[in-house]
Each structure stands twice: as structure tokens, then as C-alpha cells.
Image 1 (cartoon, rainbow, N blue to C red):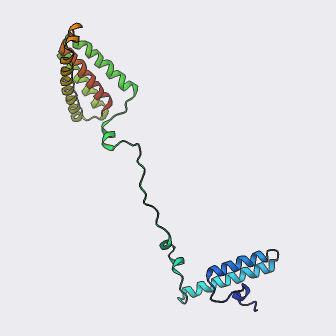
Image 2 (image 1 turned 60 degrees about the horizontal axis):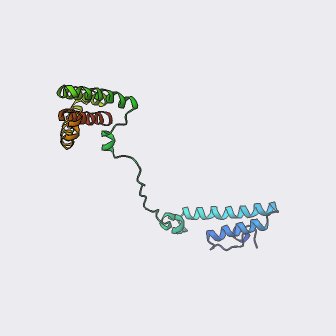
Image 3 (image 1 turned 90 degrees about the vertical axis):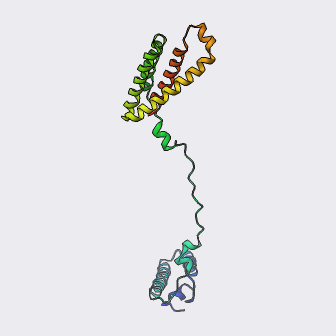
Length: 201
């Protein structure tokens, strides 16, 4: 056996596959683990084979198997990734709903409660002041007067209509405490305006 032939050094013929070359190298390295000279000889033979095959491949004399050239073709495609639904609120809702601080809730609540007390004596004046408060607090958040005016008008209409409807259902109870229907409707309207000015933008 010639020591100059790297294939013979590894105990292979020239038609050996790359996997066979690697297996022979690893096996011989384990067998010759204590012999430094033999280990170097095995490594030299292995590197010679690799260099020769690289040269032949560059010259187009050997064809690289598709499993080596295109390993991605053999790999299974990754499963379709479907992002898990997050607890995030929709963008349109986050643009509309505010997360106020305690002060942003309590100050409007105090002003609307004061308007509610004024509503017992003068419901129309109290409603006018309540509309002004709602406009102020809404406009202060986004500086969009048109949007603030629209939300305030919606709150005013909803509050008055709902307040009058509930007030008519509670007419006997309101009569017992001497509370006029208009004053009760003003209380409900202030509650709606407070909710809008505190929790909407």
C-alpha cells in the first residue's frame, strides 16, 4: 500500500463518497489516538482528498450531489406561522378610548356633580355649563375642537333622551323626593358627559 496515495492511506478507493471518507478518517483517528505521527498522516490524507475534490468540482469534473448542493430542497418547509392573537385593542378603539389618570377623572367628576346640584334649581343653566365643561375637557386632550363638539353633542342628546325615558319610568319615586323630571334628566346627562369627557379622546 502506497503512503503517497491519500485514498489508500484511509483504506478507500477513489470512488468513495464524502460520507465514506469522513467515516474512514474518524475511525482511523480513534484507532491511532495515541500515535501523533499516524494522526497527522491521517489528517494530511483527509485534507488532500478534500482539496482534490474541491479542485475537480471547480473544474466541473465531478458533480456535487443535490443533497449537498441544495439541502433546502430536502428539508421540510417550516409550518405556516400564524401569530397568536394578542390582547391588544384595535387601533380605531385605542384612538377613541383614553386611559385617564385619577386627577383626569376626579376633577371632571367634581365639576359635573356641582352642575348636578345646580340642575335642581336651574336645569337649563346647569346643562349649558355641563356642555362647556365637556367641551373643555375633551378639547384639552387632543386639541381637536370639532371632534370635541361632536362627542359633546352626542353625549348631550343621549343623556337627555335616556334621562327622560328613565325619569318617566321612575315618576312616582321622583315625586316622592320632589325631584322634577328635567332635573333627573340633567343628572343622567351629566353622568354621560362625565363618562365621555373622562374616557374618550
